[in-house]
Structures are given as C-alpha cells and as structure tokens.
Image (cartoon, rainbow, N blue to C red; front, side, top):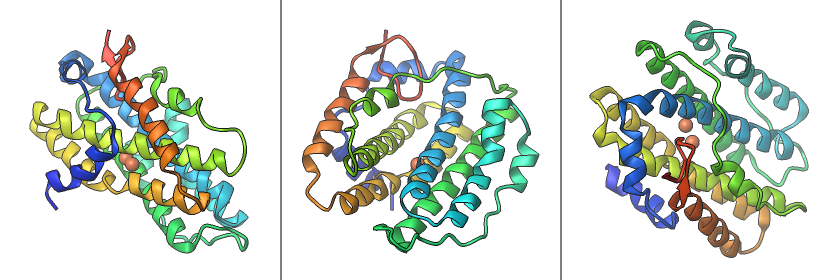
Length: 252
Ligand SMILES: [Fe+2]
Ligand SMILES: [Fe+2]
C-alpha cells in the first residue's frame, strides 16, 4: 500500500489537519531533541496503555504478569534513567503466549492484536532511542504536554463507558501520530524521513484496532462518542499552545 492509501482513512477520521505553523516549528533543528524525546515517551505510553487495557480487561493473571515484565526495562529507562540500548535490545524478544481470561468479552483475536501493538511500540521505542544515541541527544526528563490529558478529562466515569472512551482517545492519539509523521517526514533528513515513513506503515492500523475494540466492548453504536472526541482532539490541535511537543497545538 502506498502512503496516500494508508493516510486516507486516517485523514478522514481526524477532524482537522496539522497546522503549518506546527510543522514549521517541528522541523527546526533546535526542536529535534524535544521532538524525539517526546516521541520516545509517547512510544512507551502507547505500550503502557495497551498493556493496561489488556491486563485489566482481557488476560488471565499469569499472562498479565508476563506482560508487565516486558515493560519494566523501558520504564526503568524513562523513569530512573537505568539501562541503555544494549540492555533494551536483549529484552525485545518476546515469546510467551498470552491467554484470555475465561470471562473476558475480548477474544483471542483482539488480544493478539494488542500484544502485537505492544511489541511494535516497544520496538519503536528502541528505534527512537537508537537515533537519539547516534545523534548524541541525551535522554532528559520532559513534562507531558496538554494533549492526552485534554482528551482524558472527558472520559466518562462508569464502566464500560470509561473503557470505551479511553479506547476512542487511544485511536485519536494513534491517528494523529501517523498524520504528523507524514507531515514532517518530507522536511527531515534522509534517515528521519525513512524512519517516520516506516513508522507510519506500522502505526496506520493501530487506530482501527482501538476503534474495533471500543465498538466490541460498547456493544452499541458509538459514533456520537467518536465525533465528540474528534472535536476535542481537533481543538487541542488547532488552538494556541505554548508548550511545543509532538502532539501540541499551534505554537504560541
Ligand atoms: Fe509507535
Ligand atoms: Fe501506535
């Protein structure tokens, strides 16, 4: 599939395009460290979110413990600055099978999708760190932008609505990431350009996995909620934002 074909569903799902002002900011050399660092953290968060979802709602206890172990070296790196590329590389080989809880509404098929998603996000994490290392960009703690929080504050407070809403937010975060990879890639150097396009290929499916899961769990039409979060998301992207990040609004 070519890039245009991959982007068509993503662009029709999102309610606004990334503003040119954000792109102009993102391609400044001086912003590369924050762009990559924020991206690195986003990859971990994506893996953590998927992990939390399947541990809470889908897998048995033993599989849950196995899954948590996968994340630990990455979390140690981000939160405690422990480990390096080499220690993470050894942890990239996951093999154990993950089995559903007997009473889970989520079947093996969706668990498999989420497990694949987690593996992909952790692999992306590794790739971003590799690029940062090669460019002598040290990993520094940075604060989270307003984007994810801005959506999550609108999550309803009862089950299964909580889960459905969080999945919809997840879908928007994934879709926006893809859209932005595509937007900045042409302006970046060869290595980053190729990397972002490769990410786009692997991420393009993720938003649909989240939506499929949301629909399955809701058991009813969720197009109103999708529209609602689409509006919230588009607002965060198209209003002034002083804190430049991968998912920030119009640089103010
Ligand atoms: Fe990713
Ligand atoms: Fe993703």
